[in-house]
Every structure is written in C-alpha cells, then in structure tokens.
Image (cartoon, rainbow, N blue to C red):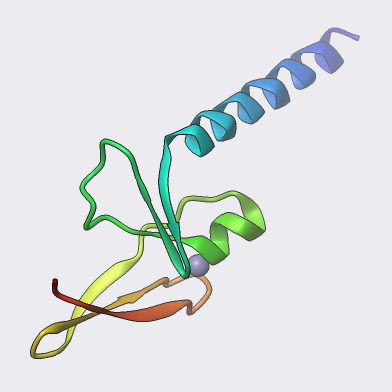
Length: 84
Ligand SMILES: [Zn+2]
C-alpha cells in the first residue's frame, strides 16, 4: 500500500511537470516548438513532443547560405529555416 501511494505520487508529479511545460509553450509551429522565456532559436521537436511528451532539442546546422537545417536526432524530423 505504501509503495502504491508513493508510485501514484510520483506519477502525479510527472503529470504536473508536463502540464507546466505545456503552459510554457509559446509557439507550436510544425514541425517544432519553442518555449516562452527561452531563446527563440532553441527549438524542440514537435513530433517527439506529440508522441511521448518529451522535449527533444533540435540540432542546427548550416544548410545553405541563408538557411539553417533543424533536425531531431531521435525521430529524423527535420526542416529548413530561413534567416529572417
Ligand atoms: Zn523528434
């Protein structure tokens, strides 16, 4: 019984954490999302978030002169971003 309660408490705090993350979301621009108060250049994979509610930071590489390629190393989600 004790362990059962501890387990439920743990699950509850996990849920609270992901709820806080959702509240912090500022933009959900497929295929990535960014957080309020965070550097807007820091993008997280929207595919991994939708699937497992995991925030996977996307990598950023030079793609072409004015363009950057964002990619997720977990699910191969990627996109090309133009410098604005
Ligand atoms: Zn991903």
